[in-house]
Length: 440
Image (cartoon, rainbow, N blue to C red):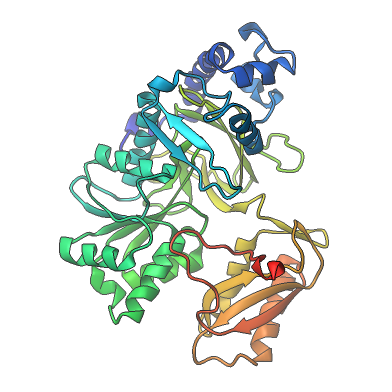
């Protein structure tokens, strides 16, 4: 089923023509209403709409970085100089978690909120959610922007059961008593839910879940994680990915299950760039790079060439559902990447090695660097959980994992086998790189 067939199956070349017109209108809006972009563009000699290059030349415009938005809000509280509408027009105000000590605020007008909801409706319909289906939602309604997912469910017509994070017993009870058949949550929470059920003598498959859509972190498309969730719960897993400052469900997977489709068509323009040089990369099958987003129809906080730091692999093969490319699979965040003696390592890549030893491993692991920062000296310490009946002193198993990481990922590691439960189970997002031991 396709929510917006005219959009989701449109020829990308035709979409680009419409986007080019919308881009010029958005740039006119920025130059008129955003003091942040008035200054930023003036610094590169662009002060009039006649100076602004076409969408085909968007790569010549400067990037916008998350740190710039933080600084903007610090200097012009509470919303920053990139707020491009009157505060009275804001209908929702979400915030980040404030890991740096001060949360960043995200304001949405009625039009902005409708855009977020439409993208969710497109993406979650593709993932199999239907009108009248009872959906248990593992995202909080606030303060985080993930709460905007509820408006998308309203567009689909789902019967929504809000639970949020932090109370798995309440979620399981809601599923059992109300007959919920769908779940929206992070992949980490789906794994946590399975272990919680097993620890409380509840067979996970007895919940009757039919489909899960994961978002919030990479992992829902990882074969190891997907197989664990699907085999334990007896359901179908599909993946979605958004970015709070741009939209929820910018990407979502459908029945073909070969990557996430671009769902924000008409609202957002997306580029693929080399994360080191910043140069554009063509959308070709198998290409890899970082995603960069530009708003095309945004009122409150439109962003130009916003660097996502999401590193993806592209699939341009025809999709039998009729949706037109591109599709992507996120392999990690460029700012989570470690460099071990010149070799780039995304922490999520370690899963592909762990997957080959699941008869003796739980699938949980964490990297515990010897120092903070991107640059790391080998061997890279990695803790790997064994199942309860496995031998922690099994040098053969540890050496086999170490050898595979060296052969496939080109990184020298030190493997420490640890007991089941050593790696913290997260009810929201998992941390694959753990620096906490360095604070002791």
